[in-house]
Length: 376
Image (cartoon, rainbow, N blue to C red; front, top):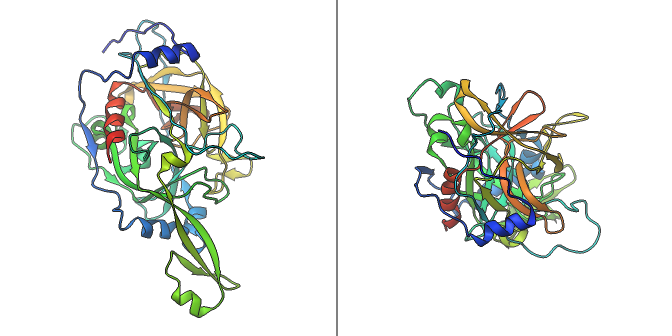
């Protein structure tokens, strides 16, 4: 379907112009998928205890989900056709005020972190994710394949048979995760929202998901002096070490958005201005990324791309200084002082070794997001 490429509109003045017009809801409603709860509020503490048990070993041993490989995306060169439609933005929201003093997280968004889950293979894995603005300040955006186990897109490309999407188990989000730390708490997944074309067919153009999360907890480790204290401890997970016993108290920390804020969201925008890419590298100088890899930033100018062999014709590509993990956010009009901008892409796969790919953020994505952001 041909769509008219609108004239460039960006920067502070452009953002204001978009906001003046409000956030226009596209005229058509699109079918979405809402999972049954990923975990109930009653069982959220148990899910978190799994990840924090044994000194956080599952977090440390988690491996990154491989971004979809083998995509041969080529640049779309026809200048008069591009994804388009009624433009819109959702403003970002700030969390608690940043503490003064030195920090390794200067000008990096507190909203970005890692999502962890147990994969279909029964092993712990991770992707990147980011907090986005929502009515209940409880929403995380990431790649669809970081939430659901679905049939690969190449398997579904030549078939009309529906796939069965299964959400991963023990899904959590840790904003600001670095070196094993949980500076702003741990949040267990509640419900996941995704486009039906992804959950049924693995459509790369719809490889995104929004997950509501329960109120968070902040782990605090305490030393248990003897076996009797260890046996009596019931405030959270506990484990034995070579030198004694440790308990982990789970302190309530409230809603995700109240702690770290939420990025805005922009859709149906021209693809003609650099975006800030925040994520965790898939590889480091020492080799494959580990569970302790730190957040990294890069900038890149995106371009439209497609891989018709996979029926993916609404992708956005960008070449950046590092290979970002699946779910890494691409932010427009990012302001480092506030740590906020507008989510306008997220990494879902790679074309070659250095070109990241994202679905184009259009009106269909907004419909999925809008349903998720209103969920309680």
